[in-house]
Length: 287
Image 1 (cartoon, helix red, strand yellow):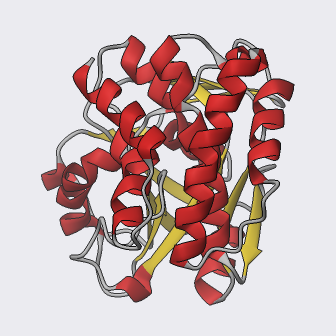
Image 2 (cartoon, rainbow, N blue to C red; image 1 turned 180 degrees about the horizontal axis):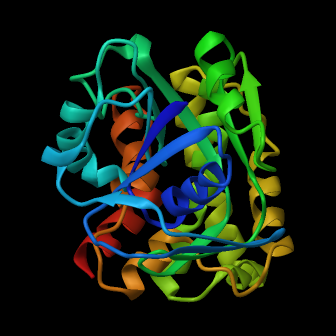
């Protein structure tokens, strides 16, 4: 039986864990800060409920075949404490996080054992162990044996595993979506705010900066990315709340570094200015 440890039980971690737990061929352990007895995820295919094995102390963790890290990007240090116990020879680590710096956040790991994952699973946590999954979604991983092995874990789930020869472009395309989402955190209004023409133009400017820096980093992004991002926000549920918006509403730390500041930071090394993303980050930091 394949042993899997899921580190982080927010919206993505809980959703992924719920689907994996439903497969009797997998032995899934949740690693979290906040304990809960029942895991319930409302999915498009119906509710998934279980009473998972859950640990809150890294000292109690045992080595796993796979570790799925689904913490917030700013909590890499917290995830690392679990990895010290969970990772052994042969363990593979899938990083399900926002941004484009999956490997850089975990320098203590051999890069060859890391599988960076672009996550497209709209979901919102309503309470510890309680999540609403709005769309089945997908996970995008680099093509190759490690990516194929991760895909095999999800073979019994409806989540689509996409293998790509150009993961860098996939990651920057997702970052384009995420960087535009900061407008909801700034206005404290859900995705429907994209129907406002002036807000849409602001989103277009944020994404244009992302495109320029992404291209400098080697991503193949076309000029229509911004149009697709805006259309995506407009065509989705108007009441959808993205993670940085939810974090700001709850008074929690946000992933502003991985979603907007990274564009400013990486742009600087290419001599590309990103004033809109810098401004958005400054406001979030100050609020």
